[in-house]
Length: 457
Ligand SMILES: Cc1cc2nc3c(=O)[nH]c(=O)nc-3n(C[C@H](O)[C@H](O)[C@H](O)COP(=O)(O)OP(=O)(O)OC[C@H]3O[C@@H](n4cnc5c(N)ncnc54)[C@H](O)[C@@H]3O)c2cc1C
Image (cartoon, rainbow, N blue to C red; front, side, top):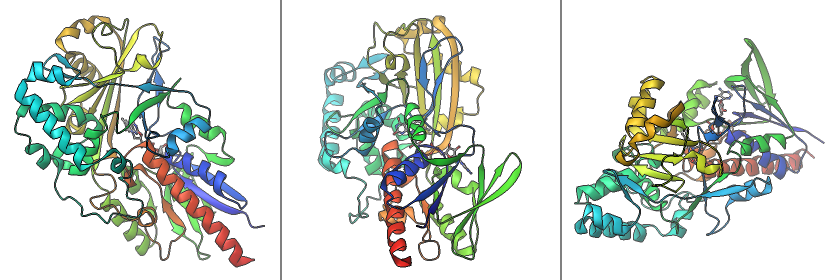
């Protein structure tokens, strides 16, 4: 029986999930080769640690979104299937003007009755516009038939007449958006607002570190994993197969495949040359369609004690510094750990502009940003790390008008029907999205193998 070959470019979650799903779905013999440019698998899921402590922290993706209360949740099912234990995460407070606002009563007390009314009105409008079920289905499985809303999220925010409420909402969602309200759509802004409601979704992380997910996936793969292989070019052969050119240890190598999956984040697509005018143009237009870069910057600090615990107990809070940032209690992922770890997740313009600074300056800025009631935290500093993630996520995932799933995943269907794209930027910029993308492509390729095998019998 014919053995089909599949080349996967990128050893992040997208590439690993594609390989794993293919292995499970294909009913034909299969040979998978995965090329990863760096020396590790996992891409932007990175669980790191400090020199002076064994407390772990998330340097990239921090949490998983849980939709299981509505319907199928492929990511949660996958994590369960891999036997990985999870911990729920919670945080509902916004810290504004050095006050912790945890409830609508706190908003009333600290921002005033008018702010309270306006916030409730905005909230009601947001929920009316998108129900939890609509939120769950927001990736329009068959392409959008809905009139797309051309307004930016900024236009929607401008309708909020109370400046304190506007600032509250901006602080609440800025780090999830990773961009500015004028650079994203009304729908994507609203989704990022609504995900703070437990009726829309909940959050969890993997006990022992999120990086256990890519590790577990790779340990179950029956694939040739080529680490330190930087893919430079993809071209078509005379026999209509695809050739992948990569560089390893300064040496060029070429491999041919029946199918190739490009599982690269949007900002890495231009690092690969796609040969031939037709394919080059198609990939360039695919890239342009999703070209809405968004930015993150993480500052993570180890303290000799969790000095915030007497005033703050959740897993994270939103802080009105850096245009709105998320402050994680990273140590809350490891109950009983000695010492404490706080992580600042900056997004959008603040992340982009401040990424130019040295680590030391950024550590100081993070310490300076602590609210007044935690200002003594500086005295507990032990060690800090900075991770820059510029243009690494998408400000308008799915593009302005979502395309059909086939269109999203196949840049040039006519002459290159065996070349596929997998990415979170095709859905919602999250791990849930990249898994949906990987599963879609894996099922497609498996189906083609079956159909093409019948043709050749
Ligand atoms: C700071 C931050 C926080 C985030 N938080 C969350 C979160 O809380 N929840 C969530 O769901 N999502 C989150 N995300 C998004 C999540 O990380 C992505 O959805 C996910 O990593 C996408 O996986 P990927 O495989 O497409 O890309 P990546 O994770 O970027 O992996 C791509 C891989 O391809 C490799 N590569 C690049 N170029 C080449 C080449 N030429 N040849 C071979 N290999 C190559 C890279 O080295 C990398 O290993 C966050 C992202 C960031 C940056």
